[in-house]
Length: 319
Picture 1 (spheres, rainbow, N blue to C red):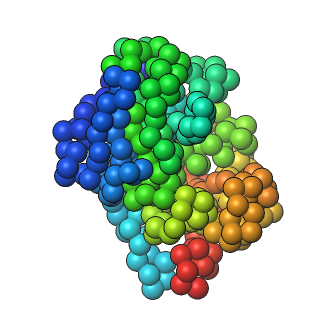
Picture 2 (picture 1 turned 120 degrees about the horizontal axis):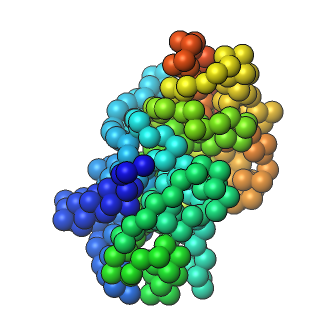
Picture 3 (picture 1 turned 45 degrees about the vertical axis):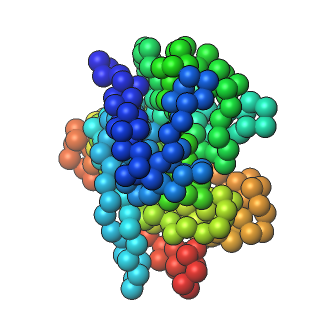
């Protein structure tokens, strides 16, 4: 790919810096790196969340606000569209870089992952690589990074600290909730990948997911945001695939409803198990509520799954 996701995302990061007050951000410099707080100490907002989402997607996707109806309730939602689904979602947006320096913890998303090749096996399988003297990383965290964190990330990404941009969001923030819902296309691709589907055949990805209303701390929001994706997220993909029969089998297994634990509310699970809730369910449930796949080679369209209004309403406390 000629386009550099890091170069594209640096433009977005600079736009956020220029619009600091308008977007409710707090911009600072740590260890010569530019740090854009969009939801740790800063208030942030929906517009900030959209820009954070675009950075997560390496600048290769459009992200916009739309609406989602749960019976008699309307929620804001995000719509994601990308002609570069594998690069944008798997090589950039996937939270595949765990940062642990001292007492600082964060999940890293964004194009800097492609420079550091985190995780390495995934990038080898995708056959994707990128070179850039600038890097952008989105950190889901509850703390501000230290100079040691900046040094660690810049070294792993192979860039100078002064050419590094770190964008911060808390899962319990407005922007944090928005950018999780914007992972809807990625969620579907990740599930297809676990089913052994060759992602290199995916040509386009689209998804819509409701944005979880804010509730308490990061743990509570982890439950709600997962419920939005798994029970309300809708996806659509264009693929160029040789075998419709095989494609149909994969699509039938792809939505969250194919899991033996379908119907369990993550909002309730976090109350019972805390962060261990991630290990208390069948991993195959981490998938969109609905997936539709159009094979451009044959014209066939396969669809599976359903939106679960009951679980969604329970998750936001209106059941």
